[in-house]
Length: 180
Image (cartoon, rainbow, N blue to C red):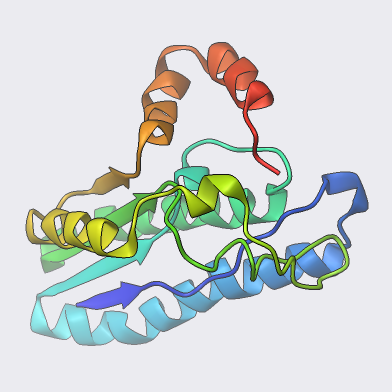
């Protein structure tokens, strides 16, 4: 099993964000995960067994303002690993996409701003998110059940279902939320 859990976030408006920040998010959050996963793939195929666990985000399922590069990288992970799951089903290779909502970690403090510097402050949504131990137990349960995707968080997980039913309603709800 490979658990891919590396990444950085971003907190800045698209119009203010340098392309270097976009590139860095894609390099770390997407290409870093893909490179490591591809390096292990021949081993999994040879043994006809393997399980990729990818910690993505709810932002890989729907977007939010001030996180454009982060959302783009997380959406890309879903596309890549959905394809990998299909291509290697006969090789008994599993993929579990873990999609956390707000978890009380330092992700917001370490998020990149428009110029690539760290934000260095916590936001209230992250601070009031799931505790890490609660998130971890839910993640382990999803891995054991070999779920394709697991949405782990509080009320923000409803955004995944709302996007399917009414993307426009989700749009208006996200606009009214405190996301910066």
